[in-house]
Image (cartoon, rainbow, N blue to C red; front, side, top):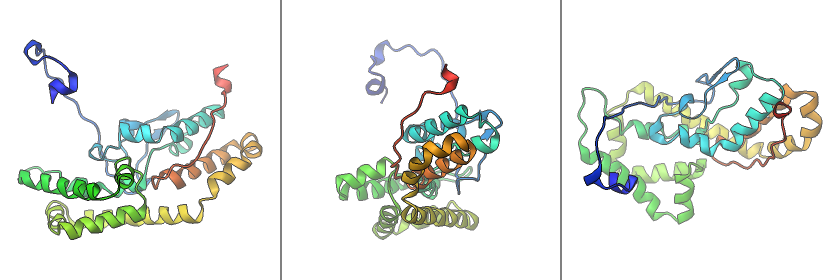
Length: 251
């Protein structure tokens, strides 16, 4: 793919030296199971390592959650809320992405084991075949990591019916403890979806009380703001609109 990717002439390409690196990956079970900040220090994007890079949650999560992260960072800087407790609330965690880690695990070959190459193709063909059968808006929503609980559950069950071997292939590489952890992830996704349904009014209410609450109780406002974003972004349904105000730190 090099000629198309870099638009270069392979005959004129001179190899100098290979450069290698790695991106830290972590399968998050819930939003608080990984510390991403210390006093006056915070990790975002790939550095936060909230999920495995195999599910596009490093730089991708940074871009998807940019309004959320910038608004919270602006508020933290404005009111000097730079303790680890405050900064740890600034994270791009999404429960609707975290729940997909089991499927990624099924395509990771453990050390010392052999995985038939056609198995990966079959897994990918199953999932992308399902998306091809769906209306374009469903595929677009899923690819952009905005699938809600109903869409995810429906497609997961449909994939299991279409290719029953999927579960057997995945179970070949995971243990009972990992199955239990994924169950916790799914329950967490379900609870967040229920909270989004019941408390969907909170983000709008938070913006309504912002002019009065923010200057008087900045720490409380920061907590409400972080949880308002969590209600929507955590289930892939960002709805909060905001306008960044000029910070006193810029003057």
